[in-house]
Figure 1 (cartoon, rainbow, N blue to C red):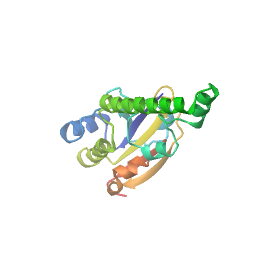
Figure 2: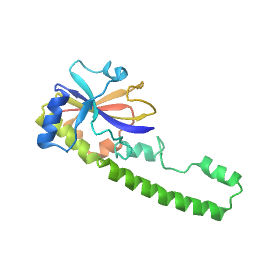
Figure 3: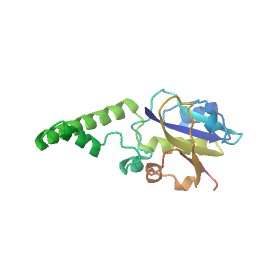
Length: 188
């Protein structure tokens, strides 16, 4: 159904994080999310949060490198799609027109997602993490990308990787695999 990026923030409450973001961070707010499959694996002082604007994160750059290499290619035309068109008796010329139209529609859909999302690249997430650690003085901030096929409370089997704040960058977030909580801290 949709991608959502969630946070696991240690040492501060969601309200404290939101106050710091209002003061110094990207213009975004986070709300608590109930998912016992995740919170059962978090530290006692960590809160699990999702963006409070009710928008999915389908246009995000987080994990983009993995989606391009096949982890989940939302817009890609597969060999199965081509075989289906050939089985319908389509000529190569008709298939080429179809591919051109599909590419045009894909580019339009991606542009719409970016406009609707308004939070579509790695930079705001970097600002969220830095603001949480430096302004709100969180002990840690974890960022996780997950493809939800149902509710935000669905079962998630995830792993966790720890990084120093100095490691945080667009390249690292672009290569972030789904269902891996990338946790950043000032002290490693």
